[in-house]
Amino acid sequence: MVSSNKFGALTIVLFFTAIGCSSISEDGKEWTETPEAAGDEALQVKDDSGELGTTAQALTMAPNKACSCSTGSVRDTLLVSDSWTRTMCRDYCVVLGTTHSQVMCILTSNWSLGSNSAVSQIPSQPLTNCGW
Figure 1 (cartoon, rainbow, N blue to C red):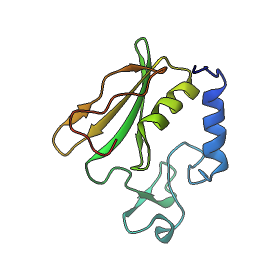
Figure 2: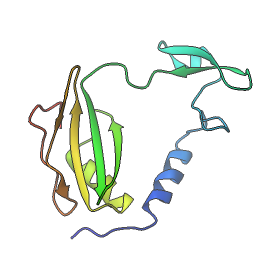
Figure 3: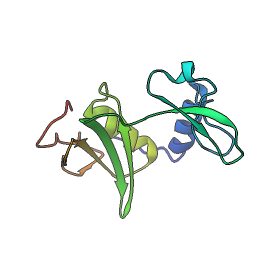
């Protein structure tokens, strides 16, 4: 049986803060202070105040895995690493307190969705599977 945690979203925010999301500036834009810190895919940018920083490109090439959590008409979709499993997606949705989970693949020219499953079940693989 899967139980819901109403403090799950707060737990996730605190988790990401604890693992080093210090690259997010006070205005909420993601950046790092040096090009070396951002790696090869860094772009130099200036924010609204004219401060120079760098940003890394987040979505570089397909296929990409995504985990989507929903309750009614509210949906939250997260791009995830290749190491994520369908069980991890379902567990993430449980922590958010949603009722359904769905895995998907974002491909070069289209996308593929698994069925929207209740969080009491593991979501099904998309028809075109990108490693789920």
